[in-house]
Image 1 (cartoon, rainbow, N blue to C red):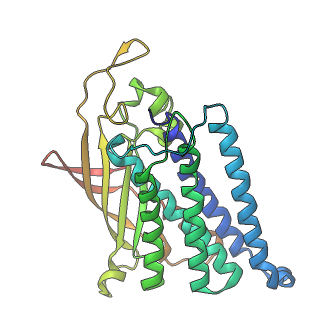
Image 2 (cartoon, rainbow, N blue to C red; image 1 turned 30 degrees about the horizontal axis):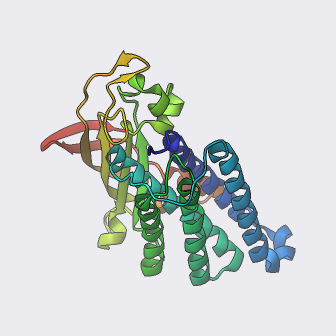
Length: 310
């Protein structure tokens, strides 16, 4: 039984969609004004209905796009925890974190009750991101993944836990990308151009966890926006659990698959002072991306410095 070849596309498109939805959602929340006061008491039913309708449309579209043309089976599981050196799992956690962020800000706007909003957002986000596994589990060619569910849950817990403990986000997951040399060998799986490589090539993607130094240490002279960031990526991959030797009759070199760990600085854009709503909106969108900075890389026991790492 093999894992879906389109999963890279689905996951990365979800990440990009999350960023766009975050911008749209926050923009809508920020746009509240006196002309909308007459619907004040209907905000929660309206927002909840919108989430439910949007979820239904998304899942229906996903089924027709990805699953309808494939054989169905009884629900079963598939272990894909060894694929892509776990880069896809971190991607699941990253996506879940930002979906939870979108949902929480939306429900908070609608109800103005922090605890209630956080609970509803966390549960609804987990259902939304994890219900895809239900489709996979009923597909004869694939199967539901425990490791995907664990990754989804981890991303939601990272957001929810910080909101419960601090009413703030001290640790923020980030995303960065640079073109790799491996996509040319597997354009179907890793992307045939820069746009699709940004969405599909795990060799060029890095995930980061940026920690706000001012918030965590309480040291006043540290800029409120300054972060230290720990990153993870992998390279040398032309296949999921292992590399392939050829593609469409063309041989592929035997690349070494290896993990890479990084240490860098970053900016917490939510902590950068801004007066205009448009600027605040832009900063919230930027906060999902890792800003290029000098970095240290640890890989195969060797330490390497980058003047500027993307």
